[in-house]
Image (cartoon, rainbow, N blue to C red; front, side):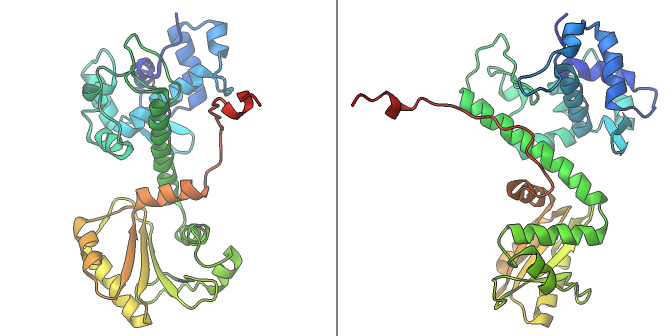
Length: 315
């Protein structure tokens, strides 16, 4: 048989881990290879990038079910079925396709972040796998460039989600260092060494740090960093931060969190007179880290070639 696509791997994978045990990618890949009866050629098949195709598809099957909440990750490199995943299997589904995942609020939120249309909105479009662009029998309506952009954007959202999980698990003081390094890479505080020298962990009045807005230190930016998981930061927290700025005679502040801000919080900062407070939530924090290359590395670079018309011009 052909190597199953990642959506075809989801249900067998969930059934495989349905006993509640803790599994690794390697164990699941080996057992699923037997389940699907893959040949040696199919087991060893790779993408042009060198990735093993079946291993990659098991990874994405697992990750999509993680987004939907069917799988939990108790520790790094290990995963197990969640209570929601067990409920899904009780319903004895024929498959776990994207239309099923789209019924799950957590997956809907993922689609919203990635700006990806739902299956119901794209019945006439090609189904694009994050792992590899696979042709279907339907004629794609997106151009190759549009498909590349869409896949690239979705991959960035996935990396951002993984980054955010790591930040939430991080020691608070290490998290503050990450925030500092990010601000330096974004152009504030000069070099990292100078920024560390000039940054103060005040622990007072709701200010976690002070960083120079310019190399000479003529302007200061006051920083508040909250390494929270799910708590939504509302207007009261921002009011406290604004009040803390008054205590230091500051007008510029950055409030960074791994969680999110309420609508009232955003509206409040817009109305503040003589103060400029920037709110950076978890998703934006992770996107900034990706943008400046902090906590991430380049896995593969794809070059898109075009014809050099100058080369073919006759003298």
